[in-house]
Amino acid sequence: MTPVTGKRPLTALLWAINLSSISASVLVYIYLAHHALRDLDSLLVSEFVLFAPMVVPVLLAFQLNQLTGRMEVRRLLRLANVAAAAACLALFLATDLGPAMVLLGATVIGALDAVQRVARIVVIKRYFSPEEVRFTVPLTLTAQFIAGAVAGAILAFFPTQITALGAAVATTALFACAALCTWLIPPAATPTEAPAAPASLWQGLRMLRDVAPLRQAMVGFVLLGAFFQGFYNISRVALPAHHLGLSQQYVGLLQIVASLAAVTGALYFYVQSRRGQAFHLRYICPACAAAMVGACLWHSPAVSYPLYFAYFFLFELAFFRLQADIMAATPRDQMPVVATLQYALVYAGMMLAIFFGAFSVQWFGMPITAALFAAGFGLAHRLRRLAADRVPPAPSLERNR
Image (tube, rainbow, N blue to C red; front, side, top):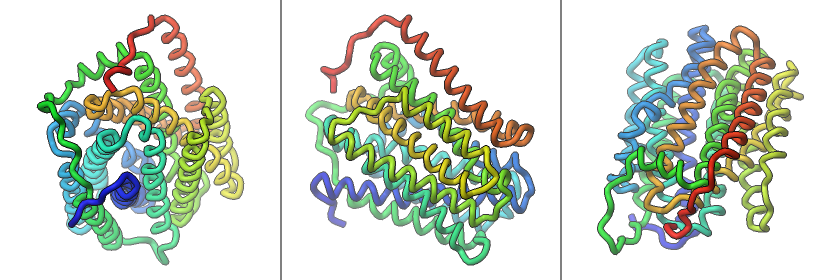
């Protein structure tokens, strides 16, 4: 295969890789979570399916950093997709999908998904200039949200309950497509200096301590992911299937709603950023929290689903603002370690959120859980602001970009 040339074809190629691989991953998670709720009759197993994919990236963050720093990024993406395709075949066709296998399968796919997410960020930072990053991130990540809609459509519009064989065929084909697309990524420009050894996670933590813009964006991103994306993982199956008592089709429909909200947010962020529009988190985050709680107060999808759309649309605006700030503040050669730290910290926060949220949903229900998450974010954000006021300003790394 002949590699693509030019920034626009490369952006489209990364978009296609994102779409294929993330569609497959989301389909695995949603299928296993709904299977646990429907066939295994376990709300906790269903919630922990969405917890399991985050375990390996947190526990093996150092190894993930070494892997993304040492292996050529195109090869890493290719191998991760091939391994994920093989894992899906084994999971859906060679196991009985009992509780242990459901959790193990979600953990394995989650680990490979994390490798790909970090690698895709490294690709963007490596192939695009700092000025292009702010516009490239939302465009390439729209595929991540359309991927959710693809997975949701498979669940929502499949004529009957999708079978393990159907899940195996769909996920394997999507991962294989992503693997084939990696052959079209051109080689990165050869550096004139000898490549440095990958930065350690301790070096990354020191950089967070010393670089105020990066530290502020990272802490904000972790809090946003822990509370708002953590609640998304809790609610995307439990809201329709447990709180509203609806079928698999409505589980898929909610995934489509969230994906459309995310795509709309990404495109809006892209257009407004090109116009120089600022996105003020002090307005976006409270509105997001209000919509999140509101979506859980009604027992009708006619009211709940539009509010869920608003919640996820606002979440994505904050997500892109902070993600762009992180990438702009990070030196290019430090992107692997920062991306690894970013996902490890966010996943650790989301794991805590899902762990406590799963029990909260079972004991208190969705509305109280949503209110607790909104209040928790507000308190954590307030504490972050108080702590930031006590930290002296540190030198910028602008010269290293």
